[in-house]
Length: 112
Length: 114
Image 1 (cartoon, helix red, strand yellow):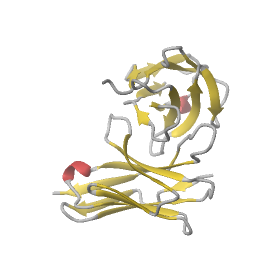
Image 2 (cartoon, chains in turn red, blue):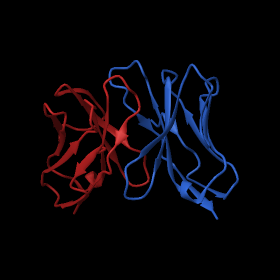
Image 3 (tube, each protein chain N blue to C red):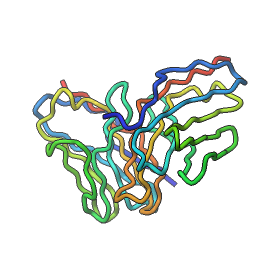
C-alpha cells in the first residue's frame, strides 16, 4: 500500500513564476491538507480539501490556491512566487474522521 | 503567535538512556496532541498521540504525558537508540473542529550518541 506521494521532490523556480505541486493521498484517505515548512520552523497549515472543496485556510495569501480531484488527489498552486516562498511543502492525508495525518516526503521548492 | 512551543532546539542523549522531549501550548481549546518524527529528506512520521481525556499514553518505547493544568506535554523514549536521532515535532489540534488542522511546534533535534 503506497503512502502519501508527492511530486516533484525538488523544484527550482524564478521569482514571479507560478508553480504546481501534486499529491496522491494514502489509499482510503479522502482528506488532504497542505503545509509549508520553512527552514528551522515547524510545518504551517496552508489549507485542507475534502470532497473537492477547500474546507479551511490558514494564514496564507490568495497566491496560494489548491484543488482536489474526485480520486482525492490534490494540487497546490502558488502564483507570483516570492523568494520567501522557498520552503518544503508537505501534503498530508487522513480518513475523514481521524486526527492523525500521514505525510508525504514533501516537495522542496527553491525560488531564485 | 506561537500556540505550540518546543523550547529546546536540540537534545543529546546516550544510547540506552531516557530521552525527554518537552512541548508547551497556550490554546486551552486544544484537545488532541501528537508527536511526529522527521528524518532529513523525509516527511514527518506519526509516532504517538494523546487525547485530553487521558494523561498518559504508551506505545512500546514511547510514552506521552499530558499535564492539562500546566498546558504541557512530554515524550519519553526509553531506552533511546541511535536510530531515534531525528527532529521531533509536537502538534496540537481541536478534535471537534472543522478540519482538525495540526498546529506544530518548531521541533527538537534529538541526537542519540552510541
